[in-house]
Image (cartoon, rainbow, N blue to C red; front, side, top):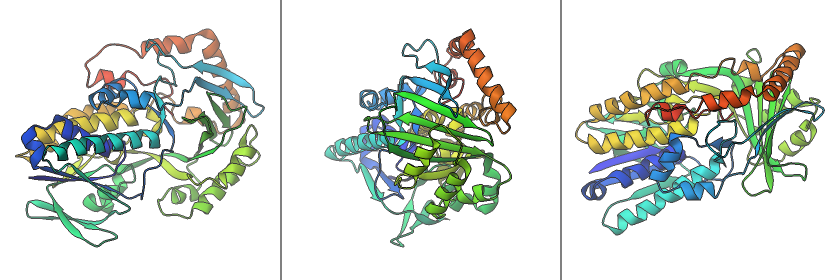
Length: 432
């Protein structure tokens, strides 16, 4: 029996479990046992707006999820660059034809909603597996790992709350850029070299929608490396907020980016940065104080020489986060899950070959995805007034000259499914 623990019930973790069941033979389904461990007590349909493009859409089809995802999109019409006086400097409409890639794809969805849909699909597949005599998937919510040890031919983990020890053939860390699995399995020294800061820190939350909030994404920039996005949700009741600050000197920002810091202190820090900035900031800060879905994090990239050690392997952001500015996080999650599942099912007799095959397929994709567009993230976080004026002027000229359209058309080319296809659908600004 192959006993697999997946840490993280997000997009990557749930998709891996689903791909294992979808692609397994009848014999493999009956001898494979999958457990998904999730730190949160429940999955909430919130979080930042993300998109699914290119090869990611093909992955949705393989999981029979495309219809459900398209029915849950936000309907974003495009992006408008605004200033402190509500003036629109550039409007870039969404393209629904697939011929021109813009910052808004035809599949825009809340991260939490997509994770929820992936989880529900995995439960459906699990029920089908159990009905045919297999073990299916077991879910453990509200717990985490406190230790990982390699004992014999197993990886033994310790659950934080219960204190229970359990041995697995494979432990998959799909628990995000601040992966506890990575920290436990590789240690503090490796953690320090794996996390590459972009000196950008972001707050995600939602606020009540007002009548003047449209289906357009509003993107506001202010001096001091500050920016805010206000975007539609999927039910027309709230607007989602993504506030970012680019600063490499304020020591409070990296500290606030740690997981367990006081939430009120993080909110206070954002209030200090954005008070008096103009545009909608007064309203946004007022609503932020009561936001229950507030989340603060450092925007980072994860770069590692190897994504596996012993019987532990990393998936998605935990192993190769490209940051929200890449526009490739969702595609990498789906692609990595599909690649790892296929390797596991083909090479069950040799974990060394499983992980080698997975890395050989995914390494070029992840490396290309981590190459951000020229000037990012500094270009979209002007520090001085002249930089802000230059940004507005440049975007105004680019939009009105038609260059945006040409750039969008150039990003849609041809290529092999796994490599060019997954990368060619990034927009000029990513999904950022």
